[in-house]
Image 1: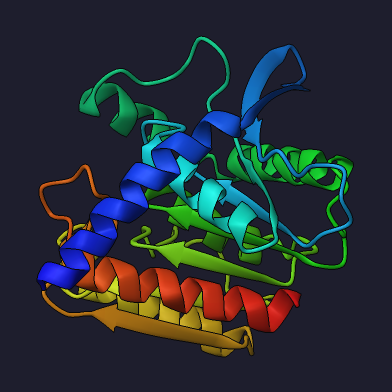
Image 2: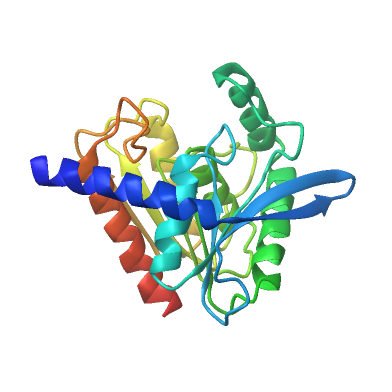
Length: 247
């Protein structure tokens, strides 16, 4: 445990320094300005990873992930889902903003698609692109799969798993990894079972990894629910999945 805490602390410290190298990229959804962050290796012909941040928008966990992915040889782009002037400042506004896009999933899918376009414009190999997301962004990773966007795979990290029961299950062409905390009170047993059925009905290449003794935000070093052992395992599983599908 001491070694895991030390490694997690080192990971956080080094990534905070490295994340300063992320470059702001502005793009548009109609009249709405969006401001994402791109790793400094843009322009190279490398596999790309789109990062969908949690419910408060671009945060340190997303920046840490981008920094580490660049070290692993990927171009990473952190999407701006909400847009300039709409970034939540507290849990209440974050819940309202995220709730809007969960209900209006087509608007969420459009913002994800626009971010994927920016990643491709950065020089990332369009045939080797994946999407990872945290929390609200994890829900977005699943929406990427549901929209059958042209990506090699998606990773949902403590994401919301449910969708409106009125939406029919359909074929799912991309590979799916779900990293699920065992003690996530925001995910019901019914949502979990429905996702499994959805992926089975969609004949997807899928897997769910469940992390013991872990609550919702178990991967975030800034959360009181951070579990450094399970967070490191989840990150290693993410890297293994990305290596398989992108390299």
